[in-house]
Length: 457
Picture 1 (cartoon, helix red, strand yellow):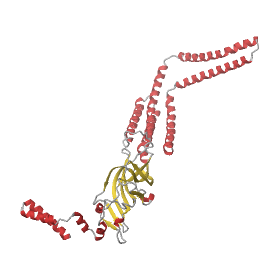
Picture 2 (picture 1 turned 30 degrees about the vertical axis):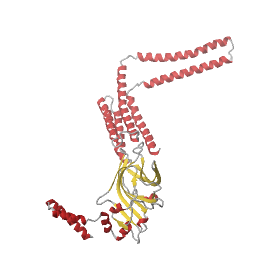
Picture 3 (picture 1 turned 135 degrees about the vertical axis):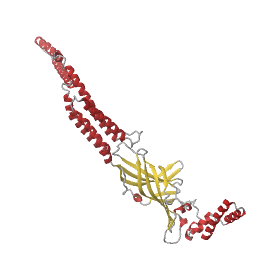
Picture 4 (picture 1 turned 30 degrees about the horizontal axis):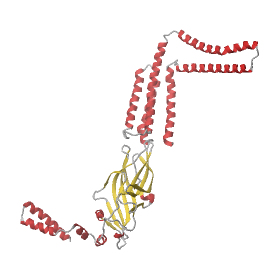
C-alpha cells in the first residue's frame, strides 16, 4: 500500500513536468494512468488506520449522536486554567487560556482489550463530538502550533476523552462603585449549541474540583479569593439546553493604587497647607503654591481615569477621594484669598475715625435698651394699678407671660449680635492660625470615615 502511494506521487510529478513541456500524447497517457491509480480518500484513510480502529469506525456515522434512541448523552466537563492574561475594566472582559476536557460514552466505539487508544487529534473529524460553546465569548481560537492542540482517547468500554486548548476573551459585568477596593465575580459558561436537554446533559466530573489551576495562578492586580461550579439550564425560544457555569471571585490588590494615587494626593494636600505658615505679605509665594497644587491635582485626577471606562454611571471610590483632596487644595487657595481681602479691608478701615465704632456700639446698646423699656413698661403700669385695685389671677398670668416674652426677645437679640461679631474679623492674621488647626483635623476625620466606609461597609 505504501509503495502504491509513492508510485502515485511519482506519476503526479511526471504529469506536472510533462504538462509544462507540452509533451502531448505522453502527458495524456501519464494523466490517464495517474487517474486510474487514484485511491478514494475515505478508503485510503481506512486502509492506513490500524485494524482495531478500522473495526471501530466501520459503519460509524458521526452525524448521529450516541444513544440516539435511548435517551440523552451525559457529557462530563473539567477544565484547567492555564493563565488569565488580561482583565480589562474598559471593555469589561477577561482573556484566559484553558484546557477543556469532555468525556462521554459512545457504545459504537467499544472494543476488546484493556488499554485505551490515544489517537491523533486530526481523527476527531471522523467521530461525533458535543457541540459545546462558550456563551459570553467575544473572541476564541484553538491553538494550532505545531499541530492543532487536540486529544482523542478511546477506552474499551466506549468512553471517549476529548481535550482541547483554547484561548478565549469572555465578557464580565463589573461593578466599579468601590474601585479600587472592589471585588468582581466573573463566570465562564458552557452550553450545548444544538442539542437540548432531551439529547445531551452536562455535568461537572468532580464537582468544585473540576476546575483547577486558579490556586497557583498569579495575577497582576487581582487575587482569586473563591471559585465554585454550578449546573443549570439555558432557556431559549427553541428549547431548554444544558449549561455549566464556573464562578470565580477576584479581589483587587490596592497596594499599587495606594502608591500610585492615594499617597501622591495626600502629599499634595499637605503641600497646600504649607501656605498657612508663609507670611501674608508674600503674595507670589502663596499664590504659586496654591495654583501649582491645584494644577497637579487636576493632572493626577485625569491620569487616574485613563484605565477606566470613559462613559459609565459609576461614582468610583477613587473619584470620591480625589474629589475630597481637590476640595481641600482649592480650599487652601481660597483661604488665602479671604485672608488677603480681610487684611486689605482692615488697612482701609484704620483710616476711619474711632467715632464710627462708638456710634455702632451706641446703636447696639440703644436697640437693647428699647427692648428693655418695652418690657418694663407693662411692669410700671401694673405696679400703678396695684395701688388702686387688687390684681386678679388673670392679670398675674398675663404679667408673667409678658416677662417671659421680653426675656426671650432679649436673649435672641444678644445671640444675633454675638453671631454678627463672629463674622467680623478683628485680626486677619488669626485666620491662618485657625486654618493650621482646622484643615488637618477635618482631613483626618474625613479620611477615617472614607476608609471605614469603603473597606468595611
